[in-house]
Image (cartoon, rainbow, N blue to C red; front, side, top):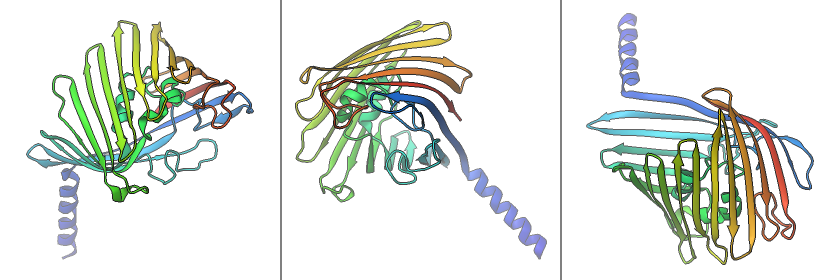
Length: 312
């Protein structure tokens, strides 16, 4: 009897294992020596002058048959300074916490994740939307927040390089009891990529961003127009070049209404396919607050970061 029960349990376990197509553990470890105007040097993780925020996550996908798949993604931010969690929203899995259904019809996602407007900016932004991005420092408000909680999002299938995502947050999922629309439209084909981002909270002004990037061998150029809610608006312009294994990037973000300019310089050196060292300088303009200052507009601030990032 015991042998029969053990055999049945083994068969059931094998069935469960075969039904689950994949489960993946992944993450980022990023730490940097960081210094900015008015602060002491520190070992930072996470911070503005880090390339990214350290995190770990788990994702899985099951083949339901007939071309339909179900999946999930949980992602938690953490600090390499003291081991604390909740980096990226306050709760443990606040970076990603959602499930999805995907198939020939596209993808339906339900839960908390980066919003469609953020993905539109990451499509063309030269640093891959690094923490020290000049575009996000100057025009971060255009994102309408980097993440949406309680989001219902539909992504179309890729059609010759074009796809779009429409996100919606119900009133009951927002503290202000006002629904939010968030969407993007992207075209990525060979060396050319362009993306539109749009989001709007009910009874509030809209946020719009449109940008593109073109790559020519070892060189790339990027341009964008940004119109956050309020009086702020302007553009970014930048370029990236490779010198052997080293990639160099320069990006300028100009708010034409506030007459404020943020500037970023970045150099990256690959140590392997998954690990790179970087050095970055970000100048946060004096006319308005940006990534390096929150309440002392009127003086420029400069940040410096020397770090290493490992993706696993």
